[in-house]
Image (cartoon, rainbow, N blue to C red; front, side, top):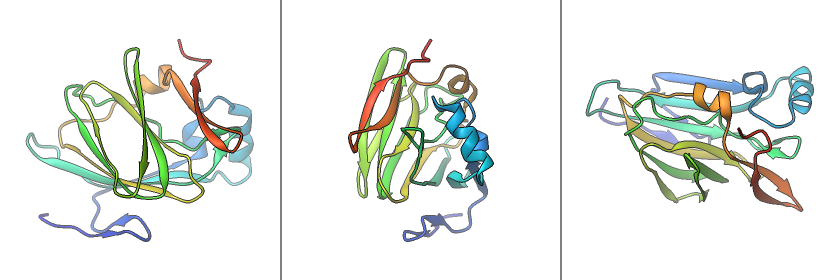
Length: 183
């Protein structure tokens, strides 16, 4: 496919080849407050985020995806993506904000960065960095990610250890804090 179209209002990519829907039940142990998450699951199991992707697995090819990260919190921790490393750690990624507000949290070893995202903002995720998106706004946070088709996604490393920082609501604003479960 040589061209595609994004419905910016809905945040949906036409002719996507892959679709992932992450509900609260898919996010067990990713948040600090599992009790609040389990309650959320029992009360409707809401969608946390959706991914619409056009994937190419060959070397030299680019894949791209639209993520719609819904607003909300588990306890006082904002809705977020699971986060991942690339299976091929030497691959970078480009994020472009399309709608809403959020953060892009990145980590490589003890080096931690976070960058505010909004419509029109472009952020480069360097190779070897794990990365996760967090919705700090009141509406959907929608972004486009562009990455090498052979990069792959390693969610398991994040599921085991998480990130060294968490993003919570504090006094009506977001705050980046040390993760008490970081090992």
